[in-house]
Image (cartoon, rainbow, N blue to C red; front, side):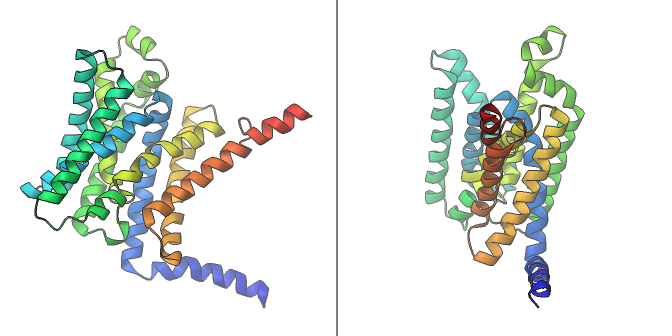
Length: 289
C-alpha cells in the first residue's frame, strides 16, 4: 500500500492547487517572471551590478504610488522612477567625489523613504505589504496583461542585443574599442533592469525582487563557464524556484515571495557546495586526494 500511497500523495500535492484558477494564474506568472529574471540575472552577475539591482528595485516604490494617484498603470510610474534613479546616480557620481556604491546607497534609500511617506499621505487603497512583498496569488487580469507585455519587451531587448551585451559585460573596454556604443548598452541594460523590477513586484515585491535578479545568475555562474549554458541554467533554476515556491506557500500557508526566494537560495547553496568544478566540498575532496 505504501508503494501506491506515495505516488498518489505526490500527484495530489501537485494537482490539487491546479484546480483553483488563482493558483494556475499564480504559477504561470511566477514562472514567467522567474524566467525573465533568470535571463537578466546572468548579465547582472557578469557586470557586478548586485547593488544597482537593489537600488532600482527600491527606487520604483514612489513611482507605484504616484502612478496610482494619477490614475496610471503601476508599471509606468515604476519604470519612470527606476530609470530616474539611475540617471540621478550617474549625475551625482559625475558631479561629486563620492564613490558610486555610496551614491547608490544614498539614492535608493532616499527614493524608498519617499515611497513610504507617499503611501502614508496619499489616500488610496494601496496595500503597502503588497508592494513590499508581492502577491501573485491575487494578481488581476490587468496586471497579468501588463506583466506579459513587459516580460516580452525585456526578453526581446536582451535577445536582439545579446552578443553586444555579453561583450559589454565581459569586457567593456574591448567593446568600446571595436566601435560598440557602450553608453547605449549601459542604459539599455538599466532599462531592462527597471522593467524587470516592475514585473517582479507582482511576485516577490520590492524587498525580494533583487534576489530574483541576482541569485539565479550567481547559481549558474558556479555551474558552468559557458554563457549560453549559464543563461539556460539560470532561467530553468529561477522558473523552477518560482513554481516550487508557489506550491510551498499554498501547502504551508506562508508568504509566496519569501518561499520563492528561499528555494532560490537553497539551490544556490547546493551549487556552492557541490558544483562539479567550483563547489567547495568537491574542491576540498579533490585537494585531499
